[in-house]
Structures are given as C-alpha cells and as structure tokens.
Image 1 (cartoon, rainbow, N blue to C red):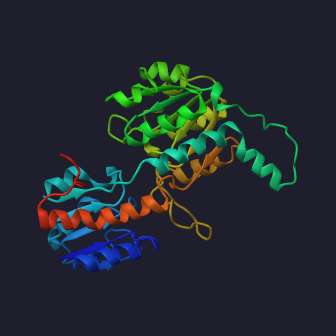
Image 2 (image 1 turned 120 degrees about the vertical axis):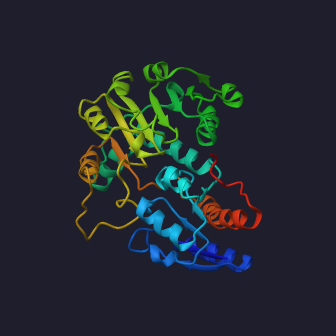
Image 3 (image 1 turned 45 degrees about the vertical axis):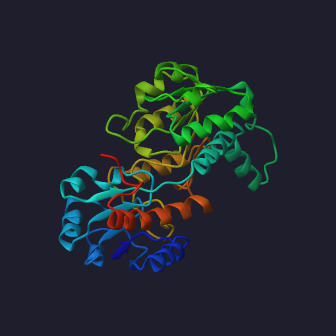
Length: 333
C-alpha cells in the first residue's frame, strides 16, 4: 500500500511517518498543496491525504483516477473543498478527519472575551505606552445573551462552557439536541438574531448556508452585536460584514475563518505581493484596520490534541478502507 500525503506540517510529519512504518505503508509526503503541479507525486499511490488548501479540481481528480488512487482523505473535519460530487462520480472513497470539539469551543469563548473586553485596543494602546482607560470599558458575560448557531459537537460544547458564565444561551439548529435543550433555549433564527448580544457561528458550509450572514440577517440583529465566526468564512457575506462594521451595526467582529482565505492562510506573505480573485485580501486588510475586528489564521482547531488526531485520521481512514472495506471516518453519502 502506498500513500501520498500533501500539506504535511512539521508537527504532523513524525506522526504520519510513524503510523505508516507501523502499518507497512510506503509513504511519500510534501509540505506543498495538492494541485496540477504536484499531483504527479501521487502516481502509484492507493490513497491521498491532504489538509484544506489543496486543489480538488476536476483536472486533478481525473489525474488521480488515472494513477489508480482509490481513497481521498482530508485530515480536516470540513470537506467542502473536496469537490465531493465529481469525486464520487469518479468512484473515489472519501474520508475526513475528526478531533474533540474542545479546542475550537474554548477558542470561541476566548474570542467572546477578547471582543467584549476590548482586548485589541487595550493591547495596541499599551504597546504604544497609552495606559489610559479611554475606549476600553467592557461588558460581563453574565449580563449578556449568547446565540449559538449550530449545536453539533462544537456548538454543544460551547453551550456547556457558557453555562459557567451565567449568561442566557439561545440556540438554533435543524437538528435539536436533547442535551443542549437542558442548558439552552432553542429558538428560530429571527429570534436569535433579535435577542442575542453575541452570536457565534458553528454551522457547516453547505449550499444552503453559504452567505447566510448577509445584509438582511445583520439588519435583524441588535445594534452593536458581536459576531464570532470560527467555522467557515464563506458562511458570511464579507461586503455585508464591512457595511455592518462601517455603520457600527456590528460592535465587534472576530473571524478565525475568512471567505477566500485559500492561498492566504497558513503561509507567510510578509515578503510578497498577495493577489487573490475577488479581492478577499484587500477586504481582509481593510477589516483589519478596525480596532474592533480581530482576525486569526484559521487556528481555532490547532491544539496538540487535535493536530495529532487529524494526522492519525489521514492514515487510518485510508488504511481501514483498503484493508477492511470501510472506515468510521468515511464521509456519509
């Protein structure tokens, strides 16, 4: 068995190499993304594993199929980047990664506290020897209503952690959880928008959810609402977010995910000129100029525990499908 591993970070490399040695798998790996220029590395491989920045275009998938690749395994939890419909049409078996929800959930709570306590302004002012309190008055979580959009594993864990702060918790999901219902109140989206001081997004990126945080949705929210997006940037209409920030309808915005971030995040751009379709880089730089906007490079997931789990999933899922005919990591039809 042979596996071609792309986007292999230094922290993943020893885990992937050790697992392949244990399983007797022939491994080829690179830090580069899978794309038309690197796909040849997968020739003769039975499975390919990547993170979320690789190119799963029809052209690349056709080439992989011609090489005899059978399994495509994303080490990320999200798999919207995998061109699922066309990949399945070609007969690939598709898998995704998994990790405990705690890392992203805890990061989300941190984002809320950073936002309500004006941490960015406090940090920048202090670095500039401005030790005044001007513009730094915050709020306490116990006085706020928090709306949680999506109560899957991560959203449910956010709700559980929030109970310790004494805040009111509203929740919305197509599939309501009995466990979440014990600690949060399920409401429709309009009610969540209208009554929440903080809104945190944990819904999957689907055709039906793409751009769901748009001008109309923001108009239904409280003046000065705090928005947290640690899920997928494409859940938000970036132009609507910019307008909300300019008009101060949005009181603070924290984004660990940004629409059009592929090619921007997880690589250095301090010595080059960044060119992106649709100007997402320009729009991100503009938003970053707001003192009440915080952006981080899609790192909410990035803990020692989660990174190890993802690396293991990348190897295990391919090995299980090829040796057992199935894997618990396989993406359901």
